[in-house]
Image (cartoon, rainbow, N blue to C red; front, side, top):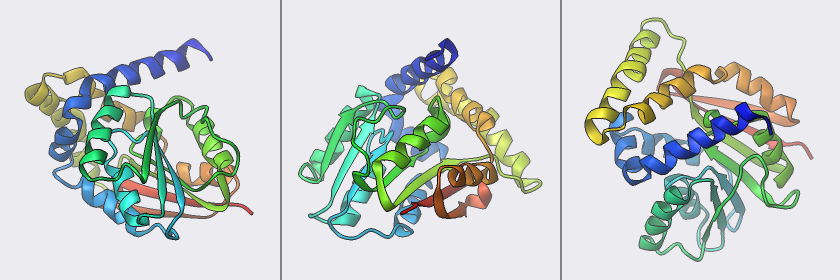
Length: 239
């Protein structure tokens, strides 16, 4: 592992450890209350049989993990994996409060080196995190490895929109206003300045679709939300 790769991993880990306590409330503020809607909209687009087994990578405080478990029902199983113990602690509290302990297992781990055997899951998901993880292609390769043939791999993330005027408004809000909110609300300017920087460095929606196809996913579909500022990529693992 090269130093640049490790440096980014360490920095991102520090950020999420430090913002875990206020992560959920800040998400509501920054997204103007829309982040839950984006997750629900994505969940509605996922076809899963009751009793399926899902891996949720970079599960954070588990909003998406919980939503998936509730969609699957009592016979389903969801494993949430994250590299931040502080985020997992917050997630565990919410899971216990919803009495979903039997359906959800949480574990600390590395998305670049998943501790699972090949072809183990019916679906593998990652929400608002692929752009944060060092080695995006390594992560997608691991997701492809552990999903069953015919299973789904899904990424939900933020992108810079391309529509004129809307793009300028979005970039102003994201690059100027969001870090200021972080400073005023929780005294964490640098941590919330990372958010627009991570989006700026990320691939485009079209590029991520092409990368999905590189990893032998078929029927790759893209669903754009909020004028292309958020998008879901879904691919089927080739049988």
